[in-house]
Amino acid sequence: MKISIMNVRQEQILSAIIEEYTQTAIPVGSSVLVEKYDFGVSSATIRNDMAELEENGFLYQPHISAGRIPTDKGYRFFVEEIMGDKELSRIEQQKLQKEFLKLKAQNTRLTRTTAKLMSHLSGNLAISGLIGKDEFADFGMKELMEQPEFREMDDVCRLAETLDYIDETFDKLVAELKEGETKIYIGKENPINGISNCSMIVSPYVTKGGEKGILALIGPKRMRYAKNKSIIEYVKKMLGGGMMIIFLPNIIRILN
Image (tube, rainbow, N blue to C red; front, side, top):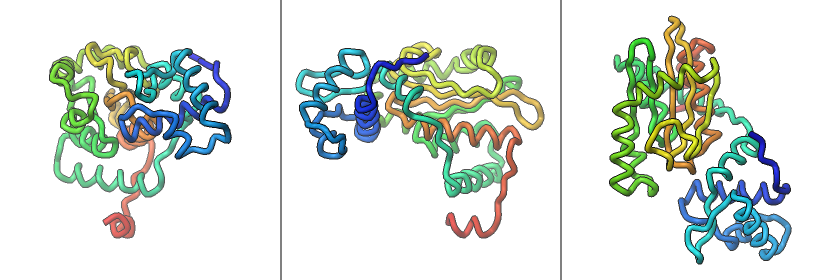
């Protein structure tokens, strides 16, 4: 889906609002953009651009005196047109490898190990499953519930209930997703009923032994999409044998 009806400056403004809102969970006003970003135009022009973005459905204003928040459409435009791909840094890759091997050494189930690792790196709820074994593990519910979007008890109950039936949802997802595809669902696009206030990044994979698995990260819509996608892609390579894990003593010394 291509949504290209804004100029370059408006793309930059949308990107800046998403970055600010991701960090603060507070609606973003024009004063913040003027203070922190150099768009080379007057504050009045920025306000006009924000109003136009709102009119076209990319932003909304929760209260008349508040700043703006990205809509599902705004996030979708950002993911498809602005974000681009991001790779984990060398240090992040080495740290991930170290933590993965440390958890495996504790004889934790692979699904539990993977979910715990992804949640730790992303700060979101992580799910890891082996479809044939009907084995699923989730980790990070506490972190998710600490986000301001999930302070209502109804939201907590809906999400907890959803996790009880996550295997059924993921069986269907694996059948629909292309092999190797990493898909991002935003808000109401989410195929999991009852969590339309969340976004989910999900990807199937195949283990070295040929077993079908699935990885997912679920978080608020202001999650770090590029970082989370790169985490899933990298973990998928480790689990699928698409890369060699190098774990040398000098790496341990650097990371400790």
